[in-house]
Length: 416
Image 1 (cartoon, one colour):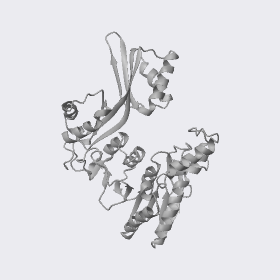
Image 2: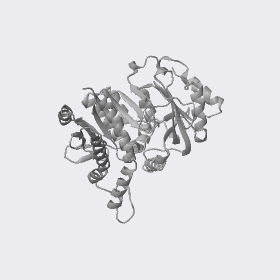
Image 3: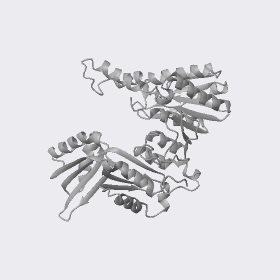
Image 4: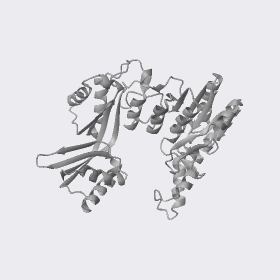
């Protein structure tokens, strides 16, 4: 029988009524002739609650200090959220007359690295699942977790349940992997910003990867990376309707791609400029090495060299990373690793990006973007490009205006 992986996120299994609703969707696919592996997240809000308990237990003095805990025990506690959901989903399916059982990561097993809290899947042994499928038993799998080489429970970090689902789809040779969430697909931009946003029927892996990395929250970056590497066809669907979703697939499955598929944004960006650095070999490494060591997620980078032999370096990072970034740069200056005249910090920025595989074969896309922003008198602070993406940094107060202007300029409300 063909196999299908169905993944339900936290909002889709937030209570027993929603679990029953999700189970009905599973039953529909089983009745259609599929062997189904269901991957579930913890109920909405439960993981945060469990994390809070770990912090409280680890810091009884009330300081609630982040990170002050045994990461192995952290994983043991936090993984229990998915365990509860998996058991409840299996019981619900049984009440519907479906032969189903729950599986935890260590029971499959899902083999991972030893990086507790951020483990990576190294392999999935499907022998036990294959045997149960042969007996007519369907699987309900706790997402977000696995088993380390030392025999300890691990969790996969942000987006772990999506990644679990894609990994199982690849390991089981599933026809596709359906990701059920609280939206009914991937849109050309955020419908909350413009009512003209249109749901896409299909989108290429590369486009979805760019959109996910740029702030679109429909899918996590790791799961899209894995799907692209393993050629797993993904469908983003709503748990609360039967509307068709968006297929994330290989570029070859898209007959005629739009030049631009979507406009993404990241609201809380900052721009940091170091002025009058010495233009010496290795100066960029001297700046960005300490930033990396401090865990600062640097994004856009510009380096300008003056006729006097000095250079200015500008980079962007999330607003939440500004304090760490400035401290790391100041420490490098104090240690004599770098020297600069001034550091200018702008925390009122947003990043706007256009994404589309059609850029590869169409000229003038960047010019059209810049013209649309110019007509709305939106000033561009920083520009970066890739083969299928153009991103700009602008004042945050113009973010929604810029998104709407670009959506209109590229006529994204029209189907290809």
